[in-house]
Amino acid sequence: MSATTVPARRKAPAGIHASMLPSNCPDDDVTMHNRQDPYWGRLWAPGSQALWSTGPMTRQRRHNAQQFNTRLALSEEKAMSILTSSRGRSERLAAWGVLDSWRTVSAEQMAALTGSQLLLSPRYSQIAASYSIDLIDIGLFANLHQPRPGLNRHTLYRPGSSAAFEKLITPTLTWPEWVSVTGGYPWSFGGQYDRHNLLATELALRAAEYLDIGTVLGEKFSSVDLLAGTGLGKEVAKPDNRRADGTIVRTDGLRIVYELTATASKSFAEKVRRWAQTINDRPLETSGLVIIFVAAPHPDRPRNTSDDPRHAIYKTIAQVLKEFPGTGTDSPAARIGVAHWEEWFPAQHEVSEDFFTLRADFATSHAAGAAKWESRHMLTEYPFTPWKTFDATAVLANAPALAATPHWMRRGDHTALFGAPMDRSGETVPHPAPVRAHRSSGRPLGAGVGLAKDTRLPRRLRVQS
Image 1: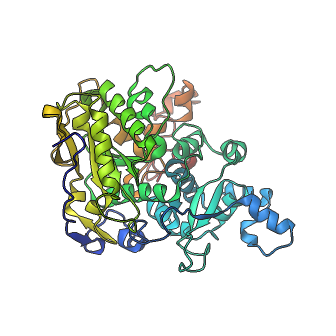
Image 2: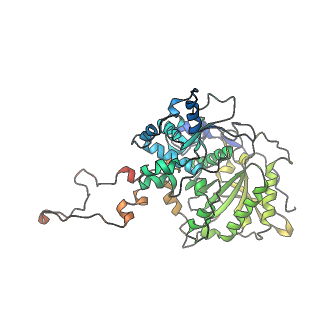
Image 3: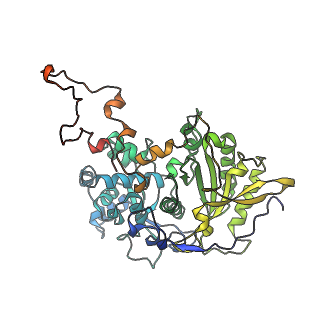
């Protein structure tokens, strides 16, 4: 078998309809089988993008006396009064966090991730106000057969390309709120590739719904720097902020980073080479890092051998891996896998056994110049023992503080993660001396009395989910 030979296309595995599976998402209305399928649903033609509306576009229509939706054309003063009120605070923080992390999502995905069905409609006050100040854009599928656009749960959301978050929103947030939305990094709005981003979000959602995993991380928190640089405590001259599409974190801390690709373009080889070099420089036991490239061509693309991008993906990876010889457990060959969307999800709203174990192919042998591929199950057959100084599960303790984390994975009070304002300032709370010391029981300041519980920080300083 030559270095460019690929495994024979496996017969599509049998699928199980998602309605027959127990989902971790507590709201059945937005679980996988009730969301639009962004792959098999044929929401757009091959190569097309969504149709987007922005705040400036709406204001221009109003200026020209054209018909427009008044709910999406609020004045800045009115919009900010909505976005700084206590009402809807948890929903808007979660929505902003999802967009900052995942880039482009459907309203159904937004509702599933945040736990709020209010976000299914762009008419909801928090969405309309965010749109009015150019913080978010609203889109719809380029499909004539979709229901009335822009007024239903099939709406799309993405961050707007403006400085509205830093200029208008950041000054109104407490530090824990800001961290919950941004993770402590600047708000970002780049990388808008509609179908690609929807699939990346959907894959993470399905993993969170049906797999026994620790957490999922969006594109923003799947950068080379966070996964293999400063995120590991490494000193780097210049952070590498190039990003994967998402990360599935196992309960033992193994990071299964995924990259979706519809074709094996010229830039694809360089992307594989970048990850191969990163893996080569970061041993598994001190990084917990593995990569899966997921082939996700449009389902209407030709499926004959010459046009199937899966073949080109295998060949490209095999060629790049020749630059990094070795097939041991710590080699790039053993840590870069290939999967196919249709083998994990063989039909609309269906899940296969391959997805339950995250089955992928690895080029683990290069004997006599050949690339021999074998399947491995990333959730059940991929051993990982972190080095004694590497706290691989720390990410699982911190992920619940991120608003982008699926809401069922971030329940509870996160005060311990943020600390009190006095803790962050290095100060201690002053304890005045009691007026009648002989009658004082020495009870700590803020301690509960009788049925009253101990005094706690206001909710905005705890970001309780």
